[in-house]
Image 1 (tube, rainbow, N blue to C red):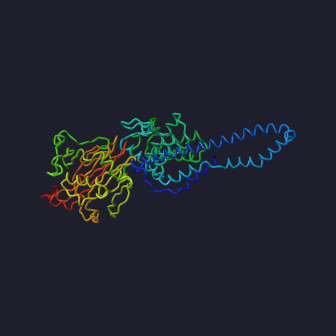
Image 2 (cartoon, rainbow, N blue to C red; image 1 turned 30 degrees about the vertical axis):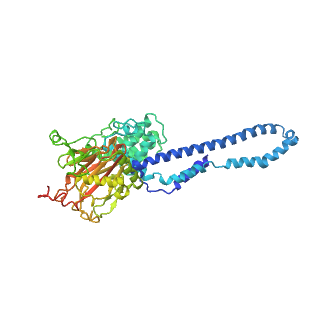
Length: 535
């Protein structure tokens, strides 16, 4: 058994890792569940074979144990019988060799073979790190403390999914290794709390306190860092860093107090939790407004504005395909005008589109504004695929439907993009159109700028996943089978900067969307220029 475990360890370490980026798509992650189920069955088969082998060896041992007790009590008397003498020769010449062969059998071969087949599809270190950072992103966006996550208590969701002490510690280490001490503190603190509450763990309290005290120091809280380090010294007086850290922290605190002419204030007795420390600022100027909208806060849908929103039947300016069956249209916002269309995609169409897209899903990219090259980015976490009309009649039918509804030609539009959002999947605030500082963004297409966006929601989302517009405080929630539409450009061709929008992180569920970016070329008579720059 030990030989098998060592072999497995070497096998897992030695396998070549693939850049899977599995965590960016829930749709592809579902395949891993079935893979894991198959591996569990393979593991059970191995255990059964190992138990069968062990039972056979035990049977041999019991039989030989009884025999040797009799034979060694009177060796000469035992061997005086010719049959006993013959059987001794036979056992040592033949039967012990058979037993040796039995012991050397390796029932793990089938399991190892199965592992090697599936290993290429396993998530790698990047996936684990990405999933951990996704939980932290959800924690920030939806203001959830670490305890809520560790107990599986998410808004409106009851689940048995829990995080152990070791899980919380690993979360903290992911943040710590990224110099993200804000999140490191939250997760190390949760690991310590669960350990203090009596939960068993592999990680020691000394290790947690070691990482936690240094992370707290990095957050600028010297009194608490000193108190935590003293706890560490009390547990492990010979700890290689604790004594030196404690002296350094105390000297630094005394120096700060002298320079500021302040008295020593003992650390707060309140446990560290969400809000104890200020979250560091990042690259996104509208971070707070964006995340508030994701939580359903800060919406600017006043009663006066609501009174200007209507619902109607829409025939696409008397499109022959919509005259007898017009589309239900609802206003989501008045200015800029955003509308939602109901019953745009049937369940059968959605499943077909997902079926076509799933094998092609790849990490979604963004266009580098400086180079124009497509690249992955941490602010866009999803996988996408592009479908052509020739791929299936359903895709062609959807393209035609978009043209009928909008009255805009899709001949110059981009292919239908299908996206599936993974763990904490999101797309932070961005513009769909190219700005003046990136004039070559769509030069290769030769179809002008992205005039409009048609976004299909292909799934309901249990929690999170809204499309929000931070500039004017709107949030649009996914509803399966519906679509939203807005213009990115004014009639003059100038960009409407109010349309900067974001896909909020998916808290619970799997979010599938498809979208059509409609370009300027070919729309000259379908959407003529206005008289002013902002018409």
